[in-house]
Length: 258
Length: 258
Image (cartoon, rainbow over all chains, first blue to last red; front, top):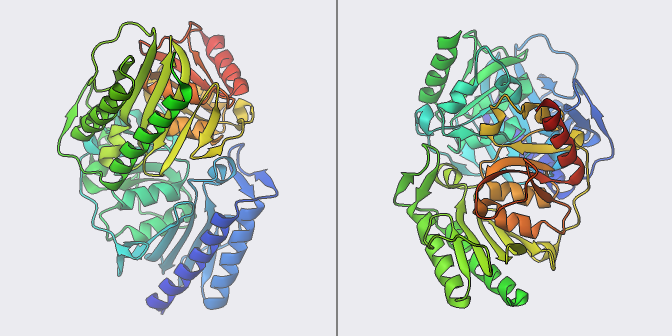
């Protein structure tokens, strides 16, 4: 059985080291396209991933590691201790803006969230936590996010979903305080747990979801699969993330039109 | 005739004082709705506006002052020296997130841009400049923004325009590197002049436009009225702001569908 305190210590150590390295030097040599024109990977993504994966593998040899750029091998079960690693979340922002990108590490035990950490690299902030420890920004405990209604919530909905006709996600934007689009799931997670916005709907990969889902559990932020099925940590899925009241209202708007 | 060096000194003095005050204390007592549910004004907007307007009026008694919250009287001509003041641009962000809001002061002489300053309050950054002085971030000259094509540009298009069918602004997003929505014109101006994004399309009021238009002129960022008519500093208008290549391509996409 994993020692939570040891996991927390090692994850926070390596994510801080990786974030410091990226903040101090944002140089990259190569940039390549992946699934589409705007899905990028640089040599720095691969370098940071290798750095984190090698460290975790040495400290936790019994664990599986699922990582975005596939430094690790294929994983088909969430049994045991599993680390999810996203070395640079928001690579487009890393390449174009040199801000608004994140590093994410999520830790699960037999498929259940144990611990998560997200580094907002350029803001020099690390949010972390889990169901047993609560939610922290750097060393400070974060208060539970107030359960505001949708009308008082800023929302993020991925542009791919916004263009859809059915269901019409624009209805949710119209019922909210406004749309915000940052181009990084990690940045949005940090804004959700700090109460700066209350809703996020997007198709997310396991490494986009794992850390935030674990660290936000005690903070008033819930994660649901948009189709009502259980969250599956081995595949992509469209999730609705936010405070209870805002997510309930958004789901009711989606289902009314379905 | 206005003394540009004196104007620059006084504008930078008062915008820094106002920004420091807001950064150190984001408390507000009242929040009211204006033209619509999400168009907010707080007592701090009015307080900061009064502070800036009174200072400028005392230093430049001959000038007209056009300000968002109407501390000043109605202005019907841009003749002479005119200051445009937006005390808190992105009041929704100020209220909900405590970041991503700006203070803007634009200075025009007989309708022509002379000087502009924008404070990204929580980042403690002031961008400023004008056609005669160039563009600066804090005290550092900013290089001209590279004239990237639309495909390599992050873009902001206001949500109101995004929902329109004709012209279909979504075509511009599809042809770009991606959409970003921050909820503050001042924040987007600062990202444009720093080369973090290359295109911005929105219906802007004079005080949303004045400072950025003046300070970005030597920086490779141009402002055009979307309908081809001259920019009018006494009314709202839909403008396209960005590097030449990206704006040309976006205008051609809009006109192709018209």
